[in-house]
Image: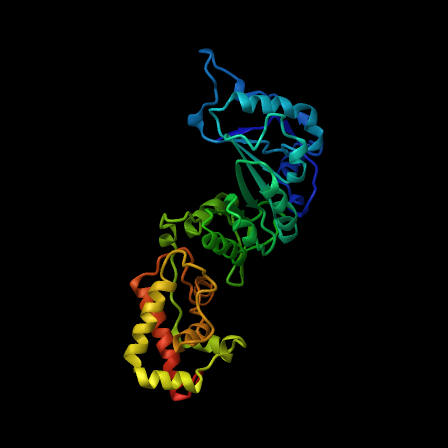
Length: 373
């Protein structure tokens, strides 16, 4: 990886900017980070060594541009064309541009941009739902070959699934905020966006916990040195078909505790077997019903990314369908929220047996008329 900062300095435009690391660092040396200035590294990708060879090569990895500013900031308008010329000349390098100013993109591109350059990825940030709903539609409509999204710092729940379903976003990154005044990042937000990525087949990276990390209702203050490593250890990054979720450790819930929680849910506790369902169970027998459950779980829940996940379980038509909704075994999102089984993981034999046992336990309670007791 190479960092290329052709100019330095920025001005804040949205909530994600509040605790900007550039301002924090510049302030520590008495520098005004709001002043945008051209740097001595402006032509870094063109610089050569004594052998007349480029100092930055493809072997050095992706070139991240403007990490201490914004590539599309107004103050850099007079310099930007020269940067585009550099990027055009270095077709052998991959350039990655992260911006909070995607709304300025169309007026800042070179005349030969066409439908985008193959060696340029544009990443739009969106720290909350408001910025996602403003920036991502703009990103999707622009002529860009490679589009990615970054929610860092992540400041709240974000539903971006409708944007991911376009198939135009190649990658999503989420992470918490660092620094002494960091705002909390809740692991629930991270996992929810990850589930959206799993359902839409979009690679996902959980980059860092941030300094204030909330998990299972508890707040943790995480040292800067381990914020990224802790995120990696979680195993919650995802790439379709790579088996990455197998690294996630989890514990299946205690059955009694689970049923007590389900009984306390207004939504889950409203499901009951009808007289027709009970008759069906009696006629078919428990073993047949269990085999049906095993089949439904294998076909509709077990794959890494089940077809129509979230909508694959009907609300009626079979006692097992009712049991699935009553026990939150109806889709992969519910399995993660209620049973700790991560999305994006092919269900193991143990997982499948556990789910079937839960379904059959619920049906048994319903048939005996003492569910929740």
